[in-house]
Amino acid sequence: MLGTECSGVVEAVGAGVTRFRVGDAVVAFRGAAMGAHAAYLCVREDGPVAPKPDGLSWEESAALLFGGTTALHYLREARVKPGERVLVLGASGAVGVAAVQLARHDGAEVTAVCSAPNASLVTELGAARVIDYRTEDFTRDDARWDVVMDCVGATDYARCRRVLAPGGRLLRVVCGLGGQLAAAWQGRLSGHRVIAGVAAERPEDVQRLVELARAGEYRAVIDASMPLSRIAEAHARVDSGRKRGSVVVTMEGDVLGCD
Ligand SMILES: NC(=O)c1ccc[n+]([C@@H]2O[C@H](COP(=O)([O-])OP(=O)(O)OC[C@H]3O[C@@H](n4cnc5c(N)ncnc54)[C@H](OP(=O)(O)O)[C@@H]3O)[C@@H](O)[C@H]2O)c1
Image (tube, rainbow, N blue to C red; front, side, top):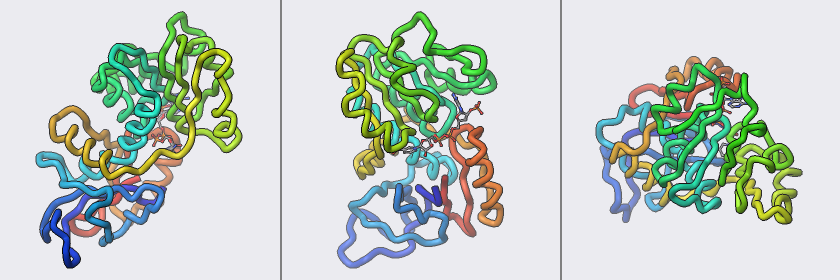
């Protein structure tokens, strides 16, 4: 994605703007509109923009929203309840690290699926159990989960059905059109739900993530930070499928864009 979120300083405000003033530090989510690989951006004051949390770096603030808004959307769709068992597949990506923290914050017991080098990261973020996908197949595990959230497109309903508890939900964050269409009926006979599609972009989710970050309940994970002059390298890192959390792109001055 070409710049989905950013942090920076308000340079100018339109007539009638009351929520922000010139000089305010903010974070903003561009989502599918992208365009945050830029020195200047125009955002609506009632849009997905919020004051930057004090105490976080520009990079940490810029990386709060892409994974966070996606994780909030899917966990809300799944109606995760305290005490439920949530498995996050791809727990070390930008969406995954947010999902682990936000599910844990909602009182869920989180199992993280990632490779061994990322086990300590996801444990620190709140995972109670870690499964190394390179040596273990969670779909053959004896455990059952109320929610399986696939953040990397590595599974489907046929493979997960056995490990979904009664009433279980499979969240397919990465899923082609065929899978999205099938989600409407898959699992119904077994009492399961499959949820797929594009995450909503809600200003209130941006506000919530900022509040959680301010309270120390949620944080971004930064894989790398590179200046715009190294944008090709930044995208190559994202495309590798190996990044931990987010890759941040720094602009001239204090304006940041993020992938
Ligand atoms: N539906 C929506 O609205 C929506 C919104 C936002 C994002 N997305 C999609 O969500 C996906 C996730 O993006 P992202 O930035 O969070 O992460 P990502 O870059 O796709 O994931 C990278 C991480 O996943 C791990 N990984 C790779 N293969 C794995 C596997 N088979 N099992 C477990 N972990 C695995 C990697 O760890 P190792 O190196 O250790 O393997 C790496 O840390 C993207 O495809 C994006 O387009 C969808």
